[in-house]
Image 1 (cartoon, helix red, strand yellow):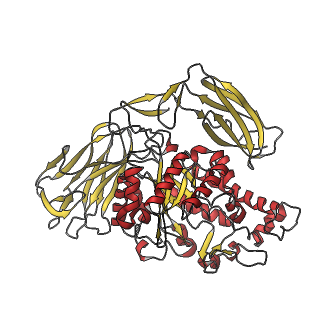
Image 2 (image 1 turned 30 degrees about the vertical axis):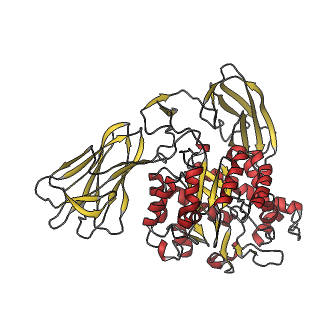
Image 3 (image 1 turned 180 degrees about the vertical axis):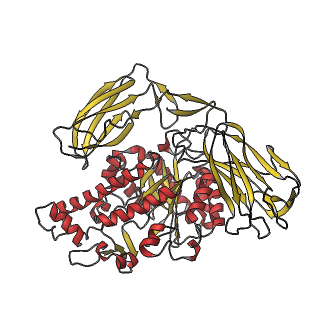
Length: 636
């Protein structure tokens, strides 16, 4: 069933990509929970709607990883700020609380270390090292490299990507100038050589690393990995974004075998943010012009600009950032990502405030979410607001809570409780949080009850645990729209000499459990409409896998939504030019199934693969500005 929430009044009508990178180098924003909270509040105030945060750097994960623990006895990076805490869990909560999407960024990618002879990864797995034609470890610009063609290296990186997706309610993942990538000098390690020989009648690869065909072969292997990475990500949910921030093309291809033009052209990535890092306007003009020609031209809707605003002691000037963004808009670049967060906050927030005042002063949806408020801000209910019922003897206590003081009780005779009734903005699965302010005299057995539409659950929370501070998840439940009793905390298990405390509570949509809920307005009443598709649809082929024929269905809607202004234009009996083509894994066109104008409606075509070999193929529907690609498997 197609489930859509339609606003009864105009909601956010602006769509623009407004992002920034958060790193653990030259920045302290991720080192404490308090700094994360402050940062998300600030970024929300200036209109940022996506954050890319580092989760893998210098060959270590920043979040606690069971995979890294098992492989290297190093669950987190050896930095006290990230040990014994899960910064990623905290950032996901605080960013989603204010409506910002969270996309973890695997910064080091296929690089193992920086000037450490391969570091702990190569020490543990020496056959993972990338070698040059002299048999030496490839070190480029100080970075030590692994072989991104080695299947074990690929599996290692994918295991980390999937660990993050499975562990956290995130919105996508990102690779950059090192994922996927390989310095052109590399490819002479024994594993890569054997793969090459198996495909070239036992011949060794060319000794010249710049050989055209040798470059193409290695780049194709990285392309195949990226397709595999996309398939892995999308297996957990089509809503998960695969983002890429590559080096500018074609330099990135020539130096690092990054075929980013291919990635954009074949919809391997959902957004692409080339690193257009320059220190002056003329340099930026030049690199943007080339990038528009090489990358944006093949897939305009997913293209955004990567803008350098800080590097070491250098910070961009207000004049230069103004020139750059004006140039972006003149060239119809609908947003940018700034590198990096600290550049927004330097000089008393000079650049951040400029962006918030001059460019990001109106709310904006993330463009590729198709009008969906993917991360609506959390609904928060303080203990002193209407809808909250207190039973028993509660008193204010001068400890800072979410806003203002907290309340507490030491009543053990008779019943004491705080019950929260919440205006649920739309029907969905929600995570329920309580704001905790731990103290050693608080109870270790606070009884919380959360209420779904059909049942309730009891959860016991230790309010004295000093490691559990701020928003803590109580549970997950389904709530239908309207005023609902959601949570209660009571003194059922309160012991003598202890206090039971209460403060704010919060509900946020759980997108893993509710990926199909479409939110267009959270401030006004909504109505539910079912089984009335108003968007282009490309369905998965059936059967899949197939041999030798399969059917592909697609929908041309009655209305076409203008992606820029949310206006709707009825096409009625007007025709739309439609093409449906099939490609192999290298992007070679295999067949054209549809190439004609079509009226609105549901269509089905048959694809016959009897003359093709077994393997993975892709079919792509293009109708007007709509482009979508899906994978199918032929098994002979």
